[in-house]
Length: 192
Image (cartoon, rainbow, N blue to C red; front, side, top):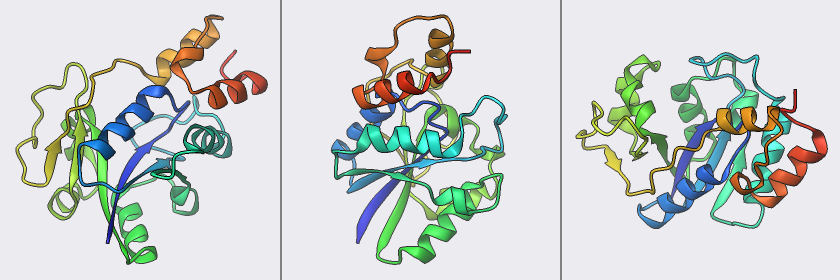
């Protein structure tokens, strides 16, 4: 049974930090694949800053296109909005009975896990692989038997920062993969 790490996010846009995390998770855990699950609506975030779902999915596809251990996943596009992780996990479990699913999240998300719908069920029934985020070194639940802190380079790159740099006319090419940078530039995303 293949173990799939689900990395949920808006990916608005996906950047090299996301890919480094996915790669490190594959190298330092028992995950066989990382699926980047593009979320149409995170219940804890506002939607007005998001590009269209298909545009963000296309950027993820371009970012992972040549890595057979990673894939873009649009499962939440077909589920009720807002997206609740527990419902996505149940749906994927029914759809892919031959796969085991685990979660990938930053320590900032682990720190707010208690705000998630049915968080107790999630932490009791799924392995959670956590990458460190600056300022969240001592998280609640870090010692739970289903939580594994993975040694991933700590980076302070965010999609918010990238969008702001683009709005200000600054070069972000080294924060994105070349295919994502080309698509984003051609489409003039985040320029205004």
